Length: 95
Image 1: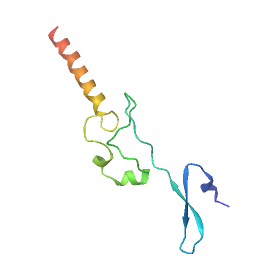
Image 2: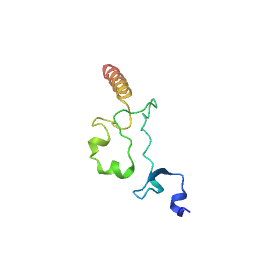
Image 3: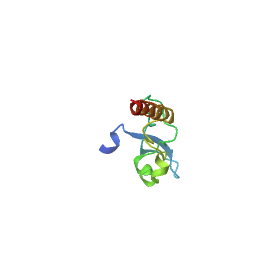
Image 4: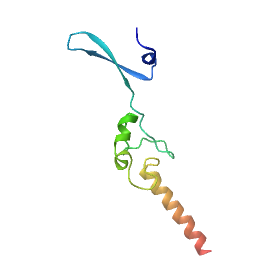
């Protein structure tokens, strides 16, 4: 009978064979889902899918790209947003 903490479906179950040729179940945390762009909803390619424990051991630049809105907005949407902001600000300056 599994322990109470192991009954949760948030843990991934993996069948392993021990050195004594006994079938055992190993419970591990599931990796996080792929992060998505907040504008278009597409998957961000630069971010990794790791468990919380492993992602916290990485450096900040390994977790997300080193650019404005890195890890939240994809490069295409960022480029479009910056060009929109520049165009609207240049129109206001001319008036």
